[in-house]
Amino acid sequence: MSQDMMRGHLDGLVLAVLTTGPSHGYGLIDALRDRSGGAFDLPEGSVYPALHRLERAGLVASGWSEVAGRRRRVYSLTAAGRRSAEERRSEWRSFSAAVERVFGGGEAGGAAVGTTGTTGTTGAVGAVGA
Amino acid sequence: MSQDMMRGHLDGLVLAVLTTGPSHGYGLIDALRDRSGGAFDLPEGSVYPALHRLERAGLVASGWSEVAGRRRRVYSLTAAGRRSAEERRSEWRSFSAAVERVFGGGEAGGAAVGTTGTTGTTGAVGAVGA
DNA sequence: GCTCATACCTAGGAAGCCTAGGCTTAGAAC
DNA sequence: GTTCTAAGCCTAGGCTTCCTAGGTATGAGC
Image (cartoon, rainbow over all chains, first blue to last red):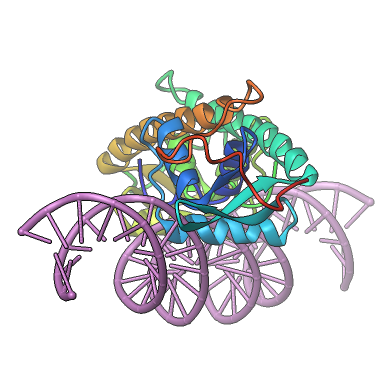
């Protein structure tokens, strides 16, 4: 994978994980890694701020729980969060489909891209080359 | 669609459009809008800096052309740009598949998310609720 | 002459993610 | 008993990227 492709997608992914049940920060990181097949191995510095952002926005709620003498902050979806998770999923689908169209359109080699109506001019390019 | 989901994807999309042939800034905006089915209607302030960035990186080359008395800066892929376009496409495919797995995994309602080995504790959460 | 569409450009701001640190507790190692 | 590792949490600061909002110039239509 690479740098920051997931800008703007993290929140949706976190919400998606939380639709399966409450989780705490560390567990969420693991869940994201597992469910993505190892592709998303997010640093804590990404996930915790995201969770706080989502809580501020009222999409998740948190509570402390004590497990084996250790404090955990457990996050779960609010009603708004559940709605938002659905929205973000369908937004992702649209986005993904659009990207796919753009990437897919370039398959067939030579077709001109169309320079806004004024057709037949694109070929006459000066000093442009590989 | 929404705000800035395409962070980190713009360059790849621009390169993808240019694989079908040279284009200038305005034409590229049109091509992206058309090929995405209207989803990507990018402002010039996004596209021009992206083109300049790509040129600095050696992935596209530009040349001026005169069309109907108007100057156009026409961009085309370099050899490195073609390689990069391919790379970014396959990166997108991986990324997209990973996101799909995360979004898809939440379908079946109640399955616990797994809180890092220490199983059977996630349910015992304090004041967390919708 | 005015407006609109084409066509280019840039400065500045906002947002998001990551790097790099710091904190605590439990359990294992020695 | 001290030290180390892992589980957990957190934040400040920086970098990149995109968008907003402005600017310029030409040709066509009225």
